Amino acid sequence: ELIQHTAYLSSRWSTWQSPARILVEQFVKGFHYWVEMMGDDVIGIASLEFGPSPHFVYNRCAYPALLTNEEDERIADVSLRCLQALDLHWGPTNVELRWTAHGPVVIEVNPRMSGSPGVELVELACGINLIREHIKLVIGDEGDLRGTRSETAAAQFLVPERDGVLDWIDGVSRAAAVPGVAKVKLYLEPNTTIKRRGDHRDLIGYVTASSPDIARTEAILQRAVGLIEWSVT
Image 1: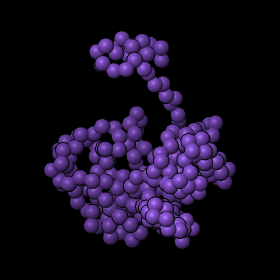
Image 2: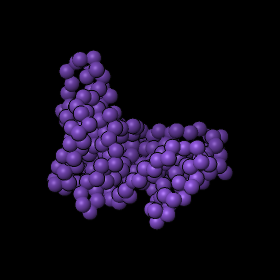
Image 3: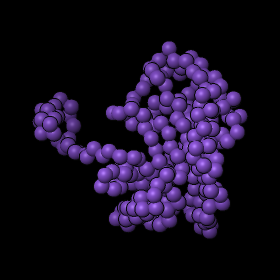
């Protein structure tokens, strides 16, 4: 199948006017995790869930991830070895992995902290403000990566079910008032055209929450998200 598809792509190069190179990537199946680091310090590991295949649309993320001690240590070790191999020892970094039948497999290494709401979940869960710590590092101030609390934070993403125009969205203030909810963030306003692409650009927004345990956090999110309604026509 790979050979046949390569032959097809090769036959189209003259039409596409693209370089005669093909990148072959392995399909990696398993739970998805990301690791937040600052310098050579592992801040923590979060889990990330996607919607239905074959698309990569975020569904939910949680921090910290539910891992065994062995899984936690192996993911942290692989992430640190990535930084060593790439000579990345300064500032925030973010490593994404999938846990397969053979253990952790690296998906990508980013010389930056994760995007929102990743950094928000870190602060909600352990009290470390990664943006502030990065600024301290840049201006030469002494940083402090010690956590000030231990909670479970999670985010539920809002995903439209169809293409069209976002007519209205309601229930945001009620969702934000649910105890335990930290933030309700909307990316779009009414009368915005929605064209789904099968990636993070499909999202309408997200809700974040935190509590002492994952079950309570998920219940808070479920209640809050259930209050938010929208219409796409």
